Image 1 (cartoon, rainbow, N blue to C red):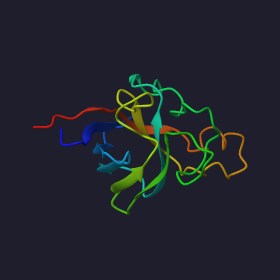
Image 2: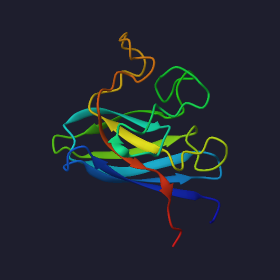
Image 3: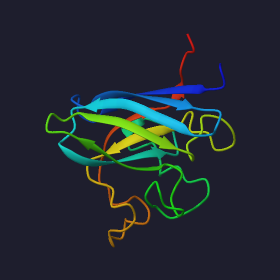
Image 4: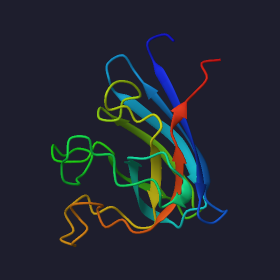
Length: 158
């Protein structure tokens, strides 16, 4: 495998307009890069998180809470106090397309806190990164409804 693990998630939305795919590459250094593209979003910022469960039997609503193995409060990706699954916001342009390129140390594809089998979720509203003062700021970033999601699986090395 050349030292890098690869994962993939196909994003589908609550309406048929939201679609995309994300690629996850975990490097030997422990950092995981997330790259991809999601279309059909409303222009602007959207909360972007790894959720605890890879269960989409009830659409994106059955993916559970944010992935939070260390039992911390919600925060920004750069904060010491954050859920492992807190990846901040993605930004959709006026065409409804978000190009994603994120690097993070807390979303490995292997080990005890692996994100494989969990879900990535795109929210309707911006994530306030735990700073909004809303009752949901410290749990969800008050990012609103779940408009798109996909289960993270291992990607073929072929």
